[in-house]
Structure formats: C-alpha cells, structure tokens
Image (tube, rainbow, N blue to C red; front, side, top):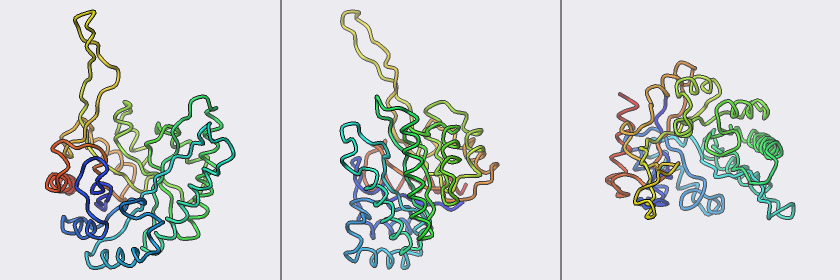
Length: 294
C-alpha cells in the first residue's frame, strides 16, 4: 500500500492550522509521506484558481519534495434540492467541476478523483435519486476517461452507503474507470462487520481514506424527572490513529485478503482531540504512518 496524506487535514476547516498547498506538499514529504491527496477546493486546489499559475507551483513542489499527487478530492453532492427543481443545472455544474478536476489531474500526472454520491432528500423517491446518481457518475466517468482519470466513489453519503448498496451502485454505473474509495469510518459507525465489508469491497477499491474516532455518549437533563435522558446518537470525536473504536486491524486484513494494494490515505477532517495546532496535526500524521508501516 502507498501511504498518502490528505491536504484537507491542514486546510483549517475545523480549527486546524492552515498550510498553503505548496507548503503542505513539502511538509508531507518531510513527514515521510510519498504521496498526497489534494482537496479540489479552496484554500488548496480549486479549478477557479488553477489557471493563475498555481499548477506550475504545485508541479514544482511535488518534484522537489519527491512526492506524488495520488488523488484529487472532489466535493460533490448529487442530490437535486426540491426547491431548485429543473431551473438550475445543479448536476451539470458538478459534472463540469469534476471534468475540470480531471484536466488538472492529468496535468499533475494524477490518476484518481474521489467523489461522493448524494445525501437523501426528504420527500423524493429513492429510486429516482439512485438513478440520478448513477447517470451523473456515468457521465463524470466518461468525461474523466478522456484525461486518463479514474473516479473513486467514497462511502460517506446516504445513497449507496451500505457496502451491499455501494456494490449495487458500482454495478449499475458499469464503467471501467469507476472504482471505490472504501473507508472504515461509515461501516464501523453503522455496525457492519469490517473484515467482511472490506474483503467484499477490496476487488473494486482503488483508495481507502482513514481516520480514527471515539464515541462519546450524550445525555439531556430532564428536570421534571430529576434525571437524564440518553440520546440516541453519540458524539464522535477524532483521535490519534489506533486509539479509537474502529477495528482497523480487521479492516485492513479484509482489504488485503480481498486483494487491495492501493492508496492508503490519512485525513483529519473533523475537530481533533488535542486541538488543531501544527504540532498535534503532525503528531497524528506520524502516528498513522507508523501504524501503517508497523
């Protein structure tokens, strides 16, 4: 497996320290990562900013750091809001966005773009949402293929979320350059058996993106009862890799036994135990690398 560090970890969205993209690339190399995944949005690599000379700077940073750009992360949600109707070409905009990233990927000698499916929209027919996701991803794949790029679907959004559903969607899309970005976080939270799920997904998986978490129980005080009421959904907090509740040994065993030997990416994409200082981010990034190489 190729270790990879996701630039979103140093983008500042959850209170973390912010590194400009080229500085992040050098930083990842200094931490010992041979590859990076770059967020396809500001403050890192938005298609709006790429023509301004940013790509030349990114290429130089990759070469001088001896780091590969393995993946570009697209941020998609392929649901069509009910309030939008047919007036706004919402899905066409996202297809154009992914196609723009495919051009950027080709320029950076990157072969993978990660996407998401869709959050379910209340009141819309599930089969309609499913078909819309399938047809949109098919067009994304067809346009990306012209640039030598593979689309990787990450198992985070509602439509096609369970591993069984995700494999059904992949079969419906039926494109040779459509693979999976299969992660442990979602199936672990939803109670899937991680070894079984990972082994089933592995033959179709091109990347996996990893982070670890603890569950923190929540309660609400009920003064009329002088007691507490347990809330159904726990708070989930990111922690250094290998210290959370996710059984990554089982997950990676399933991936390996299923034949996966691709990109293994570490990300810090939520508030992190220990805070967002550069020192804490680097500690967590090194911990993942040590775990993966151990």
